[in-house]
Image (cartoon, rainbow, N blue to C red; front, side, top):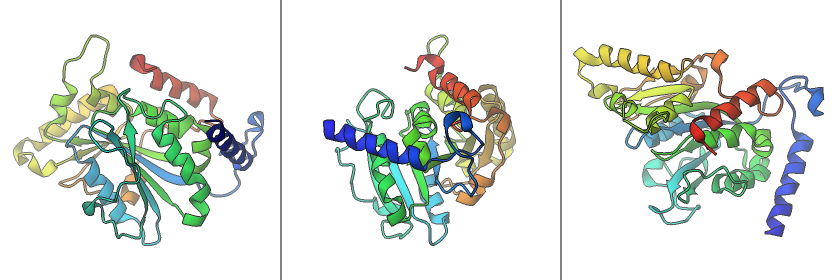
Length: 290
């Protein structure tokens, strides 16, 4: 345990020594960034079971440029899967694709949060990748959560932890939804003053991808879209709605270029934006999250 702690402290020291800020931030002892942000672009994918999250992961991987080097982390329940973080790449995930530089599974051990502890499975995995960024040439990171996962611990890790923030940039939090089921999922009854799982996921995403649009009857599609948009914006006024016909087909570039309401941005620079950091803490602590 002592060796692990020393190793982690070494990574922190290295990260602080090399970290720059996106603004002139003398208060924190950091120099303003003078060149392009070269951190690894990260997309966090959440959504209820069966919505098409894994299909989106595959679609995004397939849309990356030929020279891309992508890390894919799949969040699993430890009770349902063998504890092998270096499990083989699933056959339907294009294991021979040179753009897939590293595949891993990270586990939830029943607490509902794999990231709150500094020794969490995802934290260890990402920190372990940092020394290899230059040699492996990593360019992208895709994290897929389980269907019942709360995205807030993931957002906190990717936006607030100084070691992770120094090397990874959270660009999108995408909630994938089955267009034919999302209204029922958002309406699921829960105890007073609580939000159901689907609502928490929508509330903390910046993009809602309505998948399986082809399964909706053409005559009722416009009405469903209007109802979903109304419900989603009650929870999250700044969320961007996108549509996919089947298999969550979406291009990485198209997803990243989609405009979003920056006035309600949930992805502040945790290193220097004090107001943003306070907003992040409020979001993370909402609905009684420890």
